[in-house]
Image (cartoon, rainbow, N blue to C red; front, side):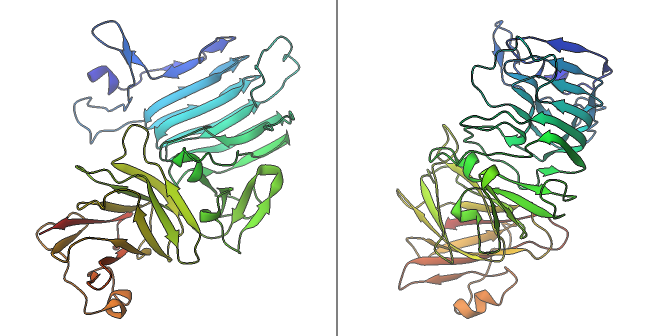
Length: 381
């Protein structure tokens, strides 16, 4: 396992072109039986110590004429820097966290495009996926090809059933003869498509620093959002946070989450793992959760990428009044019950309320100062 945590010494001035597979592919490591498996490359100064993370910088890489992706990175703490990616179907996708492309140039179509076969696929410069990932000090040029799915400088990994971070961002980016962004309408069986949002940190994509670009999904949209039909997306001023529902021992998906204005989201769960479902939502709102199957007795609900005191109100069915609610994994101090819903609403997330008449559990998840997430675990007594 240690090579998968060994620091990268030097990767610089390499060139890849015209490969059927990715030019730079950090994934699919070897197994002892000669086959490969999905791997997570997390470099450390001490490979045996997870607290010694260090950046792996893949620098001055040139990749062109790939009919698929030029770059795929899986792991954490990676950089793709000072690189040029041109005439590829997809420039780069990072199945990673804390991984960024910096000081780079992406070209959709150069004068050297002749002979490249894309099989009708739309061209993408940089694709958001997993996260937190992002692009900073990057130029995108010549992403203009029309088609049923327009080409674009920025996009998301398509047909995605896995979670994506609400912390994904575009920073200092510029566009030359390029459609900034495009995202297909979310597929009903792909929860990652439904959760797709990214932060326009500096305003170079939308013209509004701090705005979010969000998928064409009513659950993510409010009256304060501005439609961008050419992107099949919306620009929204409000923040978004991630949420997850999971159980170690029970199925949680499919489930439906309904916002306090009736906007609803149906989640099918992580592919191959119906005990976990993920999405994006607006903080500071109320939500009701309904399960398609049996109500899980041990659900764990988490808000992620939150800031101090950010909150969400949640109501869900629970079949018994004898229960414990544990906040932020503090099993030694279960939350007390509120006297009524009014007391819960006024709380700082330090209590719950169970409505015996309706068999509904009312929760308020609030991020404590200094944290970036809030979690509640429910279990029977």
